[in-house]
Image (tube, rainbow, N blue to C red):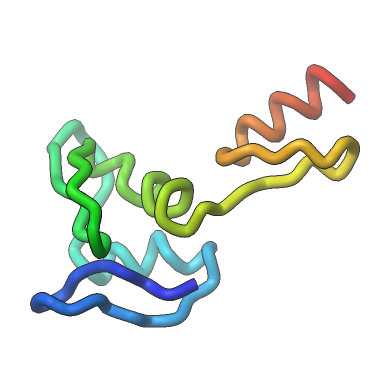
Length: 90
């Protein structure tokens, strides 16, 4: 996946695996915790959210990361939703 975080007016464009985005966004100054609000700096995005939600927002909205159930093929935007589904349904 390519990072679309705006740095000095241009997209970062680093190519990363999804599990690298949390640390990568910290390098861009995104620090989770608390209820401080910030705007998403992804190309074309104007959403505002708590800083603790930024990484999840990037993974779900911009990278469209999905988790697939190995039992039935249903997909989920959050790993915890997949885990809950498997406990309940399988």
